[in-house]
Image 1 (tube, rainbow, N blue to C red):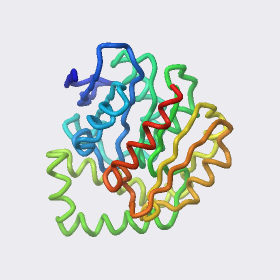
Image 2 (tube, rainbow, N blue to C red):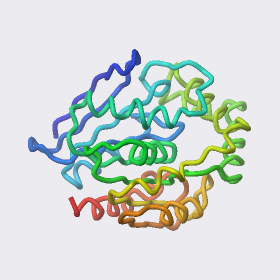
Image 3 (spheres, rainbow, N blue to C red):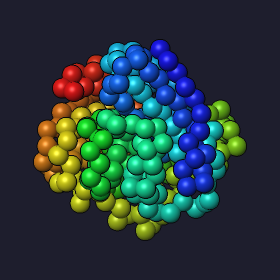
Length: 259
């Protein structure tokens, strides 16, 4: 498997990336979009596993303020997911010279994928894999984010995240936590983007997700006009690719058989 690492310079920010190519052929690329506290290295072996199983190229990168990418100013604007989906992500695809891809997003990354797919017309995007997506704010989500703030102040969570984010740890956590807990963020909603998404979509959700309920998926399925597949995973929390990697990989592989 060919593997390359480097940085994309997007609007003055150096963003770390990894590109895995299981074959020499020009094939579909899966673009992984990490969660609100994630980064390239927090996907661990998942990109390599999905590349081996599907034969697709896999591009993983860290957004500004995460992992080994450049830091970004705080506080993050409450439009940070819209900025990523509508402005940054298309430039990432340009920089990577990607012609045909499926966006694979987790949590905030899944929401960024929805914004991109419903907010602009980009013929390169052929489908979406959405793990634990958010399209509106739930009290369950905010309660878990408040709990994370307490754990961060107690240093345990900060030390854990610092292993992946290094000097970006405060930027990563505070940028995410403060935005979601801002009272003005309560009106955040992506439902307007859903009717414009006609490409195939796979939804993956853990039944024990403490950051979102099944209502998120119900709203997405209600408003998406295209083909939607749903995989609910028992004994699984907010991170299907960590909690149930085998079943998550199987669901993605089956979804990609249509391409």
